[in-house]
Length: 119
Image: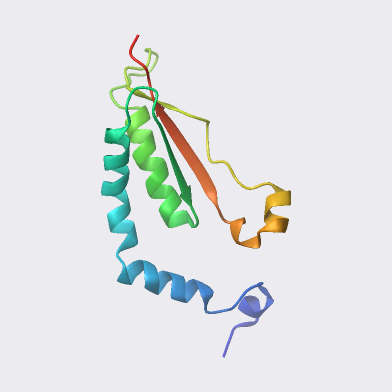
């Protein structure tokens, strides 16, 4: 039996369950952190790292990894000593027009950082 609240939501009721199973079987969240650390460390001066996520679990990991790189060694009230900066603040989301053309983009979040060029 499917609860009434779930029946009112668009999409198939089992979609989130199968997504959770896939994430667990493939160990996707455990792999994401080390992959992001590698991406960030491989950026050359002026290099840009962009990551597109599709659910909150991924987005939280991406946000925290990027924040660690951007805010590394920063002291409150002092200029940033980090080698990285935000490409844009927060996550970018698809426009209403994009969602209309591609409904699967609705949950997408884009985050980005840039490695600073040495002065």
